Length: 263
Length: 322
Image 1 (cartoon, each protein chain N blue to C red):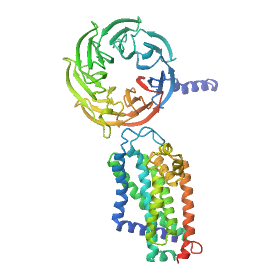
Image 2 (image 1 turned 90 degrees about the vertical axis):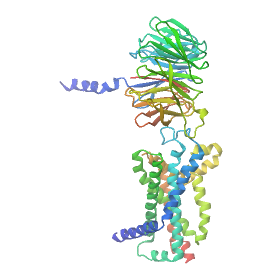
Image 3 (image 1 turned 45 degrees about the horizontal axis):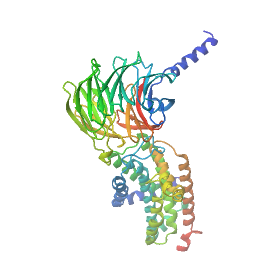
Image 4 (image 1 turned 135 degrees about the horizontal axis):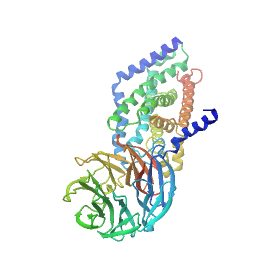
């Protein structure tokens, strides 16, 4: 047990170290959602208010609407970036060192996930503080209630990154992940526009959005920011997280997964 | 006291709060021909009462035993028992009554008859027309000074505020305001008169003593085209230091400092906000949003919309029943 905690602490510390050393990564992770918030939302011009959907009790501006989606964006990009670092680790050989630990492999991977999720959460809170400085605030209880939601969503998206990283052979291939995973996941979700608006233009697009686990992660965060629980979204996020983690474990299993072929 | 008596006594004690009259906001729904009654504690519609056609202005008698409703398309002012929701009788009102105001004497209603360019004065006790005063074209906004000596009618097309001496029931002054004045209120113990101009996009403030304009308030909501900024109803806080102005299709309330006449804030509410009413302690403000068919509740201290309640179609007037 003590060993397991030691591993968690060591891996989390390594993530933190990487985070501290790569300050530009932290800035980049914040600039991205802030550009969306301050430029895209301003251009969208929904000053007249969005239609009321749960959990909102009244009309909200577009800036307020996209806050949960942008929190999700930070988690999504960080989850992918952390998996990118795994590919790098594998190329550099430090992965082999990590995987030779006597601790079970699944625990090593979970530790990696927890470490990167905690860093993402820190970035989300920084983003929320900046948003509050621009006058976009949530109920006080929401800032506390969102913590477990961010953790769960972070684990799910990190799990996806982990699973993907086990199938990516080279760092260069990661650009494909950007095009084929991150962007579709982000745009085909409720992060930028409510699903009813999607349904107005295309039922198929709406169904894809409703199927996208990122939509559920965003909705879970949205409800949590208003101190409410969206049990459906939470269940889907949990289930998707478990599937991604299982895939990652399979991928990193030396006997079965891709790792065996890559050597 | 034996248990046989204790139990009923206990039940009686427990049932007292439910018997007590809950504070309510009454909202007229133009298109549904109904009144929606909102409980200010639960913030839910607790009753929907049918009225005459196209109900707009709504006000209570001073003892709250009667509610007066302008049923514009029925060409009448209806008098309702607020407990039962029953229409007791109609008052003669002239054609197309849109807004009205109850004189401090609790007896005379000053009614704007939009189609006839007339202000009708009705005695609600004798149920008869006391006077009809010719005013500008399409009169709408109505106000009466706290001392009851002056009544105001604003005419939408003539773009004027008409000053009526309530003793002689005659006009004694007319002042030009910006395009389509729709609402008027006296402020600061009757020393000021505020008039909103819907198309002009302004609120003019007049000194009552000499009917001179002392200030004009302009509005600008970030991201909203100026054509959409159409001030209509407004209300003052108890200390009269702050006014809340409904900006119509701009979907916002403006928060105006009533001492400096500066706009301090804008609050997003529902679509096409018309009028509003406070709860008793003026901690909450309820706005009627015509197009979205709902009422937005604003926390007055925080200047934030906290909830929007669905009511009937095209809600228009609002009044408090404590």
